[in-house]
Image 1 (cartoon, rainbow, N blue to C red):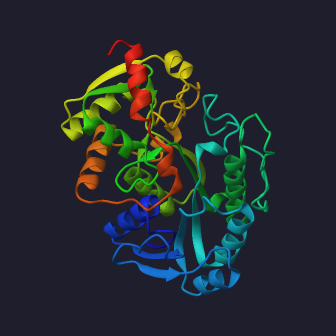
Image 2 (cartoon, rainbow, N blue to C red):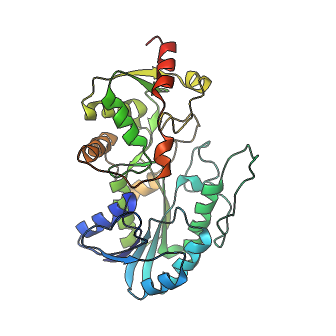
Image 3 (cartoon, helix red, strand yellow):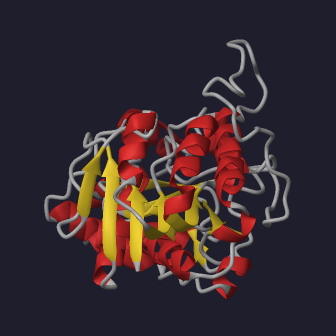
Length: 343
């Protein structure tokens, strides 16, 4: 197989490139070169996807059996559309990495691939879906942009040649968002650890290496399709996740569980101050049985936790990203809530 990875230098894109090389595939990585270099063994081409001349120059390096698009998170749908149209004659398939945010019902409702997507045309610009400053409803901007980009990929290549992957939360070595690394650092610190909500609550993070493997499988597939990419419903829990963090770090920490209403009452910011904690009914209720039937295999979350801690301990440093600073509760606020719990 000969594939083109749009991205290829960090987290998912890098995992895709590494996994493809491990399979013995030929890998071209197209990126701006601002976030490191692609894995050794790839053919790396520098350029900007929003610059038509750069994409034309890239196309001259083909053909490829498939394009795997891991770097469109900050691109407007029309840029995805223009690039995909330029590459269409040079590639057999297009695998687009989207997100569950593309669904209108996330995170409030259970989701399947038949759930309604947000509205956005394939040629939408970067301002499509932006909300006024005084808006107090759901912020669907990011999801609309991703839904439009999905339509752009399909408009360029045709549905039978496109696979759309919609992951939820991706964790693992190289994570740049900071969710799992924050928990690992906090549990390594030890002491009394504020744990959010119900320890038996199901969660569905997926390992970056498993997403990469499924993306490569789809690059080889003769069929297109849309797939939710999450761990199986009911297999992993918040309690199991945090216990794995304690175990991986060798910590003497003690988890103290605070009910949702107490955390909400103390103004704890969901999703960020205590990463992965959110009370919305659909946030961890995403059906991924279609992907599992097509070959998605999700390793136990404890393995992801252990591998990420090993990466951090070996000097692994993520690509700098502003989202990293969003995560984590202050020690003062944590102690205040623990005091309310009598701990």
